[in-house]
Image (cartoon, rainbow, N blue to C red; front, side):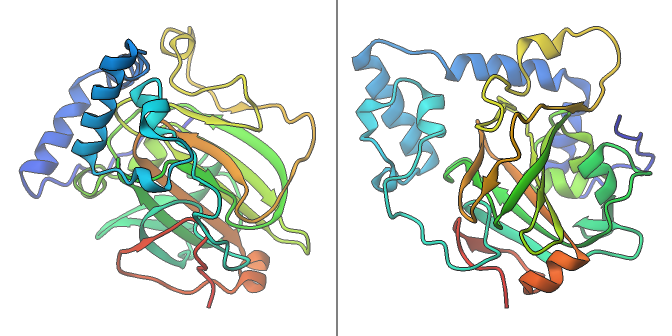
Length: 299
């Protein structure tokens, strides 16, 4: 279970104050209800209008989508759209796991912490294992934020064998910049899916999908019957516990292969151990920049 965080929230403006107000509402339940709403399939004529409005509001680029807009049967269907062939180029052995804004890619601190925002850090073992006392020997991390207009499928940033898959329950704070600046340890408070990956030549990586407010659902092809923030988890008895999800095989994944899907904007964090870092030679990035899935993040 994720540890309690004792650091005070950081209030620096109206946006941060509004984010903190979400601490007094049932985030997971509201997100579940929003998810139910965006999955409604309206009659065809109405759905086309709804789809056009959604695409217009969020400025979604449908030119790269695998299907025409009229073929999508709900807002969630639009949001989780696949890409048409050849829309992304896989350009290296360590690549961006998603479209979005690369917030930072940098070495891990000696305390096994990562920077969330200026003056705020969080525990990478806690992020990956749900246990701040766990050990993962992290050496490098890369954080990518996905806005609502982005393509929302998450892909393998490296090639290797998926040797573990876990669901870590939690809250559903927003993950936009005001929230990241305001909520200490936000990423280890939110629910997440974690993929453990072993590289062919040795070394380990962890791909973390962090859930977010509004819908809050994540899924993976590696365990198709599971989705986060489902009705059963909202009303489950007993404490939240980390759930190791079964893998019938140890699937080999190629760099750029799809791992999971976000149902709304969120964040991915990729962590490398020392051996993986030495093999992949990631480049340090300290200021935000736009990235596309498959873009090289190596030197």
